[in-house]
Length: 501
Ligand SMILES: NC(=O)c1ccc[n+]([C@@H]2O[C@H](COP(=O)([O-])OP(=O)(O)OC[C@H]3O[C@@H](n4cnc5c(N)ncnc54)[C@H](OP(=O)(O)O)[C@@H]3O)[C@@H](O)[C@H]2O)c1
Image (cartoon, rainbow, N blue to C red; front, side, top):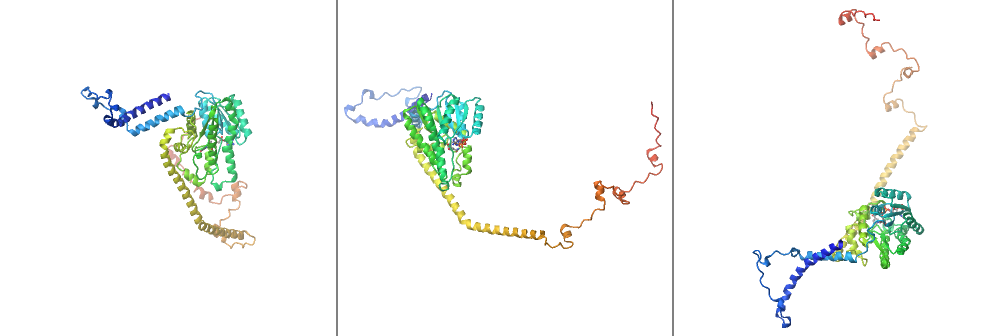
């Protein structure tokens, strides 16, 4: 289907280019008339009769075909695109995943981030996926999530550590046994970044980063490749990073490991060119993954400043772009990031290119954009350094101010402490008479003897002082005058009737 589209595009481009070429050739034919008889015009070259009028218009006046209205620069672009499609269709890489379902893909570092997102997509397309990582609980959670989302049981998790050859070998074997399928593709994805400036990176970190990010890939490939070669089919996907195409402040220990992965991929691709095992290099951009969060927590300030404004992708979109790229047989995959796509074009060297003709056209522009970026990053580093200088210059002044504030505060604390000690010591002088009253307010009268007991109910309440009730409840009501009630209510009420039996 794609090839048909390609041919159609070529035909359009050729049709568009042809009239322009013919038009350019016309004036060149004129001088031929004056040459020797050998070049005398043939009968076929005789001037044609003037065209007859048709529907009231001569043929010259007929409207131009649509393609003649396309400007020449657009015709060139169309021709380049057509050539590009031809290149991609017939000369480009080999698709790594058969379109059919049921491939077995093993992903190292598959319990989180990009690995997990890739597994989701593969299982949803009907493939079997084995995840390898060190932590059982994370693996179980990822497997459950993927199987529930796909309503299948095609995903399994195997504990394995890429920093140990025996561990990764037995994990690969266990995955093949559990899925009852040999591996069709192995994605070497486990890795992490510890961003630090070169001089701030501890010596051990360089080793540990290389051991995980590069040697981890080496160990995984060594464990998987014999099986792939035996079956003479399958794919190796080496996950590197956009930082294998460039490098900037803060990735002294990380970027070189990803450059090493890129170098290994190129060598492996060449070595396996005689086989049907394909090699692919993934160059993901910054993604919002647990690993990226950890990385950001310790990133130097200058690195954050350089990366400010760069998009952070979702692992799901990166995984989708990677899969589509792999399925089209691309060698290097920029995973959907536009800037990285340009960098891949600029920095591919002799590695296979995804888009050969487009690269030829775009390269000069990429060089200009690249120069702009480099200047911008250098400027950020210089600005950060000058900020640091300013802080260092101001530091003695700030430090003095801080010290004097601290001293004042300590003096005040000491004085308060001394006073408290003096007041609570045995030798403290008795307070002057009336001092406590002055400090605490008016002296309170002690309660009447026995009042508390009567309130708490332990002793009989003493008889209230004469007149106390009246003061509390008011004066007692006087007895009504004789006959007053009768005069208010009316006649004296009759005596109640005897109750009936
Ligand atoms: N995130 C980004 O912005 C970014 C950008 C460019 C490239 N990359 C690269 O893309 C890959 C995936 O990155 P990510 O951000 O998705 O990673 P992530 O979120 O940190 O996940 C890393 C995965 O690798 C596993 N893992 C770590 N050490 C391992 C070891 N020694 N053996 C086996 N498994 C191990 C982890 O599980 P356990 O801890 O349980 O083992 C986890 O499943 C890495 O190679 C990274 O360098 C990432």
